Length: 333
Image (cartoon, rainbow, N blue to C red):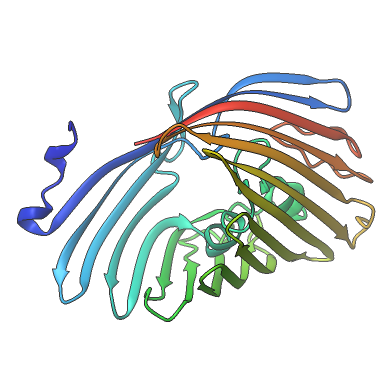
């Protein structure tokens, strides 16, 4: 194996690993105003990425680790223009008894433990829950930029062996800039087929003057023949509010999984009471191996009032709709 020289844990109880995902899909989106866009897009099933991570065993149940992960656009070969390790860049110290202390740039707890966990499609592809949960309109005009990841953060993660209980909290430093500071945490319980947690988060707006505040509860139940998920979130920014609900199901079918979900967003306050939206999605993933999968996804967003929620990077006119269809392949290494 070409990467074998990078692994030396047999001698020094340490390891360094290269990893990544390449995801590409043929996608078409149509808006109610007649506009249509055809693209070769990345990230339909999971985001394309390239990374390097490593750990060192310090003895006594203690280890040190690092993780660098970059966004990659395989359709163009480009990466993030302003920050190469834009997905994650962290240094951590982990104890089997006391948990993990992690520092750097990382996902906020609400993203990893709720948006990505309690929705069949998560934040990926045309069926992404991102628009209605943390996309531009759902940020209620705050312009917040730390709803997914935060810079200059310190995160504490509870140890694993707590009888099913888990949780993490984090905060990010301003370092001379008041905008996009984040504070948040998630605590939950997972045992057998059941997983349930509650979370809170707040992120300063683009000017650093006010906070958008989030509180949510999510759950999943794996019945064997299907996994059911639900997520409910309340968002508040100044006089505006948004209630967002996601209900989904994933059903194993042969060598793949059939997925469906429904999301509804209701806004209120400051003249936005009529600005609501819903999203319906259906998809199938067929696994060719443990590392390679084919997938197809359809999704439609319907807006009311002056709402402009979109999908796949396409926004419809106010009160309009947009639908998307994609066929792709995903390979991890």
